[in-house]
Image (cartoon, rainbow, N blue to C red):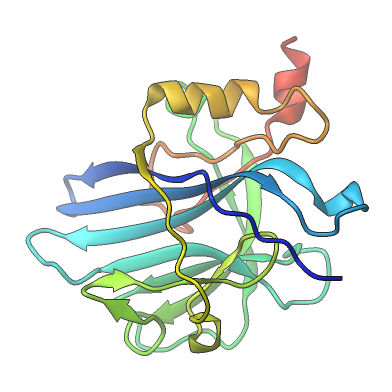
Amino acid sequence: MEETILTPEGIYYRILYERSLNRLCLQYYVYWQEQNCLGFLPIADHKYDYEPIFIYIDIPNDFPAGIVNAGYSKALGASCRFRKTEVRMNEYTDRDFNEYPIEYKTSPEPHYPFGGPDGLDGNTCVKKYPITGAIYLNKFQPMFGISSCSHVFSGAEKELHGNILSMPTKKLDDQVLNEWYFDHYKDAREDSFGHDVSNAFIFPYVRYCDPKSILGSNT
């Protein structure tokens, strides 16, 4: 069956600064109103989809110090669930041969709205790469292709083809975050936003936990 990739509603951004590193993180979330993979089979279709791309800049440099994004995992088994976090840092000299699962905690309250006093347990798969030779840049901007109907990104050359998406750039402010966090869970087809945007300087940088059970218990 042919995959359907819709046009994003927009790319939302925040800018974070870590004083101890003198480093900026440009947090981007490409936001779709719908993910449509299988049409008549609802298991992979849902409302709302958010795909992160984080770009790290060491002041006063222009060239990225790091690029992190959600990618597609080819690992077998349930540990990766077909998703991985691709981490590229300029200090890496070798790429990982395979992605591997890791566990993490989200930020505790009040920084992350569902973190509680100690943060929430989460897990993902990670693959590390050096920036050189692992990503294509256009005027210091990383280039990505959408590698599947689930909107995950790939920096591989074979994915950099076809139409270039045109989408508005919008600020990921408190109003948008409140809507994504607290309104996008009330229907079974809605994909809730469980990304911890509080601190993007802790490995594996993209941290997520599904908050539906917590939100449901508060209604």
